[in-house]
Length: 284
Image (cartoon, rainbow, N blue to C red; front, top):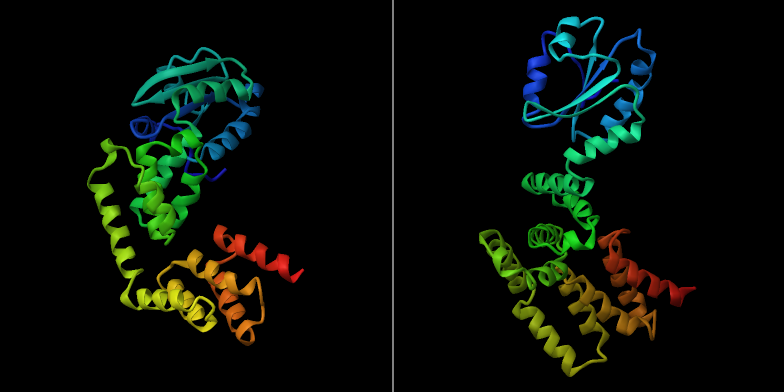
């Protein structure tokens, strides 16, 4: 099986592989063709390495071909499994094993799936791939999402994906010990957005609408101005206030603006989904 997480161990690479356990744990499976039980479990171990997606490296050692290496490890029976972390053996199993027993051994020493997702999300954020990091963070349990460092990472992703309301809600509840330079930088980004999102033009339109609350043309202009500065929920709510009474108001102009904003937000957007459902409830 071709995989970056699986390697055939031999005289040429075994020191390099063990040194690699300084960064990523290495699970060595000692096997031989003559030992049917040791050979039969290899596909399961390969699948396991794929499932863990780089949390450990699976190193396969054919003891018939690499007798010198096997003797260095003092292997007495096949199959034998040994887990190396930081260059040292930390755990192992001898004799035939069920796959769940191997998983239980690994889970004692490897990061949990949540920890792996958090580390992957941090890597994505560092690379500027906030849209890829966001679902990993959102998939964490609530208790982990409540931690200050995760809140900051989520707020960062929300800012970069223009979900400013969600970012603001998180940044308003960051524990004092996490209000570092990272936090201050995110707050500064949010403040810049809010300044641009509340321009004199928008304030003027808001005042006009307040004086003429039934003027659909002013409402349409204000909604489009909101949309341009990513205040989409406010834009949709404003338009919906008119559309729920008359879908064809202004000869359908408001409905077109409403649909255009929904289309711009995309199918997976929660706010867009809410207003789509409200629209469909009127149409059907």
